Amino acid sequence: MRKLLAILILPILVVLLSARLAFTEFFVRWEYSKKDFPEDRWGLSNEVRLQSAKLGLRAVLSDKGMEEFKGSGFFGEREIKHMEDVTKLLSFLFPTLYLLGIWWLFLTLSLGSKRDIGYVLIISGTITDGLVLIVLLISLINYNWLFTTFHNYVFDPYSWRFKDDDMLLRVYPMKFWFDATVFVGSLSFILSSVLQGAGFLLVKIDRARGRAQV
Image 1 (tube, rainbow, N blue to C red):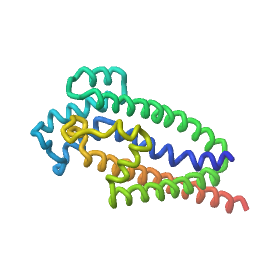
Image 2 (cartoon, helix red, strand yellow; image 1 turned 135 degrees about the horizontal axis):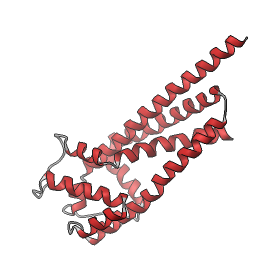
Image 3 (cartoon, one colour; image 1 turned 90 degrees about the horizontal axis):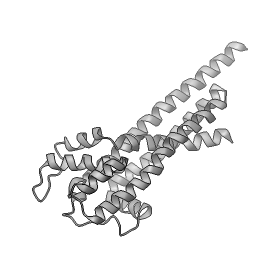
Image 4 (cartoon, helix red, strand yellow; image 1 turned 180 degrees about the horizontal axis):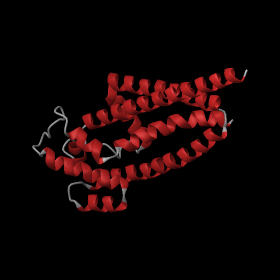
């Protein structure tokens, strides 16, 4: 049972960790630095948009940031409500990441055997890779469908739809979210592959030790 739990928890941890790294100023600055990042249709400079994007990031990560976001005057009531919904979601997901990480570490170490730990990493990594590849494939085929389905499932279907000239859409155009999805998926794939490699190494070490004791 412990092994099964450890296997099922790890893919969640990998994806949540990758998502947490996407919610950083580093990612926002990196995204805006790309040459193919779309210009604002209404002439707003990328410098102003970048500062507004950072403001939105701080809003969903702290109460102080949210107060700053509300007081900026750039965003309407509906946009503020949506960002508050996002804040509620992240305030659940990110603490879950930290708590699950501690629990997973305890479960995995309690297995004792390098072989068992190795198999947990191998199987979990394989599951993560499969799920990530499916999401990336769907993103490449029809990202609008994936984006809409996710938002309709997680949020009220009418709470996140905005006009083209609303500031949230101007600051975070669809390409921003597509790139964020690819970033999270790619980083998750890399992390899970590293874990798989570590798992194979642990199994190999365990087998070598077993042969040496014979």
